[in-house]
Amino acid sequence: MTIRVLLADDQALLRSAFRVLVDSEPDMEVVGEASDGAEAVLLTKETQADVVLMDIRMPGTDGLAATRQISADPALGHVRVVILTTFEVDDYVVQALRAGASGFLGKGSEPEELLNAIRLAAGGEALLSPTATKGLIARFLAQGDGADDGRDPARADRLDALTVREREVLVQVAGGQSNDEIAERLEVSPLTVKTHVNRAMAKLGARDRAQLVVIAYESGLVRPRMD
Image 1: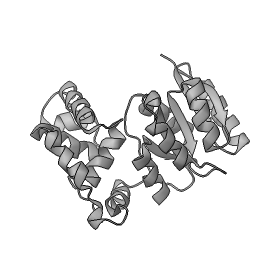
Image 2 (image 1 turned 30 degrees about the vertical axis):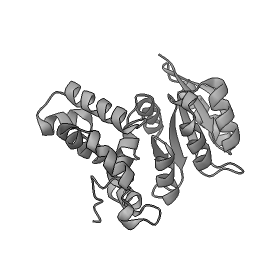
Image 3 (image 1 turned 180 degrees about the vertical axis):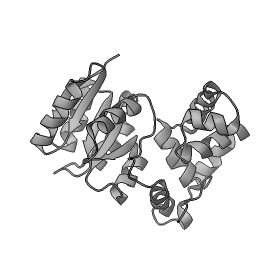
């Protein structure tokens, strides 16, 4: 299946470079280009893109607002947003994760990293830039929006629907572990882990693994490491 990619960036030269790179891959194609967030939302609907590479800072409607609109639209439930940013550790990036982005990548990343990011996002994986520390991301997430320690009581209550094993798997997912790594740690098969992840996503209303990470921290199930 061909991955349909939408490019959203206010720099035409950068969009052109991304288009050449993406279109060179046999399993993906660029289906549209947007120069601002409003256009990105519109084209996402028109093209039925699978993955949107979204610049976080654009004139008018920025990438954060556009990501929130895309994630809130039930008709776009299949769409995955990957935030592209010059600043890899940025409070705006964390807001984007909360808004529904599947992860983020620095604009200075290698071409193979970008292509891998598209494939991971399309497959429902959480994507955190290799140069971004999970601890700092967790610290931002735990800060919340002024609430005590960032814990969301409503989301904490929703964890009651999870089995003990699903909670264990969720903790590992929040730590950035892959299904294979979780399987090795818990001494189960990768398929079993995938089943637990999918069930946790369904019970918690998470779009993908990135949203499971957000829920794990905001609910207080996992605490940020401050080192």
